[in-house]
Image 1: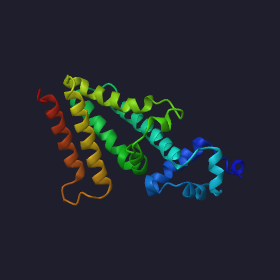
Image 2: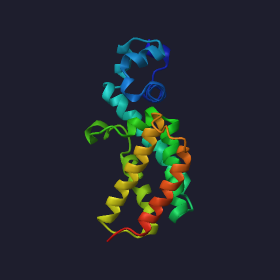
Image 3: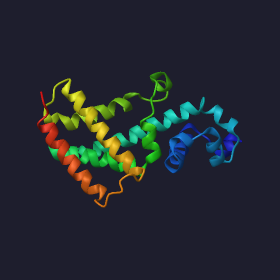
Image 4: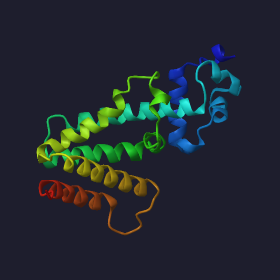
Length: 192
C-alpha cells in the first residue's frame, strides 16, 4: 500500500508541513497524515521512526525555507535597510506558514536530527542574524544579547499577530515599521 501511495520521506515531510500550516504543528499526527495519503498508519513506519522524527523534519524544512527567505532579503543590504528586510522576511514567513514557523520553535535534541540532514541549517539562522548585526559592531556578550532581543521581538510580534491578538485600530504594519526603526536605533546606541 505504501508504494501505491507513493510515500517517501520527502513527501511525508512536505505533507506534514502543509498540514501544520492548516491545523497547527501540535495537531500533526501519524494518523492525520495517514488520512491525507489514504493509507494505514503503519505504512509510515517503513519511512520514518515516529512522530517526533516527522515533526523534527518539518522543523528542519521550515528552518531551511526561512533561512533562504532571510538570506535573500538581506543580500546586498546593511544597517537599517538590512534589519528591516530581515524583520519583514521573518514576519512574512511566520504569517504565511504558521505551522511550519511553530515547528521552528520546537526544542530539538541534536540526537533527533543528526542523521537526518546537514545540521548547518540550524546554525544558519544565527549566522544570518549576526550578519545583519555586523553593521552595529557589537562585541560579545552584547551581540548575543541583541540577537536574543531581535528574536524575541520578531517572534512575539508575529505570534501575537498570527493569533489575531492586535485589536487596536492602529494597523499592525504601522506598529511594525516603528518597532523596526526603534530596534535600529537601539542597536546603533547599544549600551556597553
